[in-house]
Image 1 (cartoon, rainbow, N blue to C red):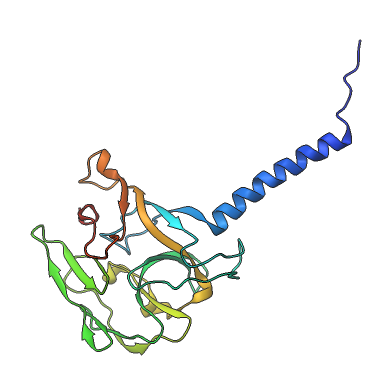
Image 2: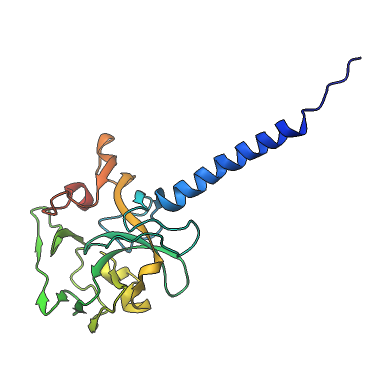
Length: 224
């Protein structure tokens, strides 16, 4: 019987190196360019519902060494971004809305956000959806009348951000764990790429942008 000849060591090493390169590309891609996120709680309702799948742009705030908080390049976050970040309290990955930039003076009275001494306007649509007109990023809020606890006025320090959930009565956010350091940001959620929420037809469930290109309005599907 003819014996099978083992592959030359050089060919085996080439295969191992090819496999290693493939996994390195996947790691770098997910760590530095794009990723997805599964919404685990209702702290961002109605904008994000439990089970929503988010498309996350990890380049939005610069390039980061994968699996670290070391940034190689930096881009400035924008007020109103829906941000994926590591909690400064326990390191858990969270998703909240960025409402306070460095230098901002922010307070919350249990219903209204006070930004640099001015109350951020709110209104209701004909469908009784509550909208907060955060400058440059109008977005839905949970319609419950009380959204406490309140927060006394604070000044956001340099390289830190203040995050709140859109369901402020059901969100452990900067009112509890404080400001989020720049190094903890992981990426910006750009869209719900699939939503199982009630009230949407089959085609409406796919790709719901979280921020209008011109900053003028939010997608009406986010309030259903």
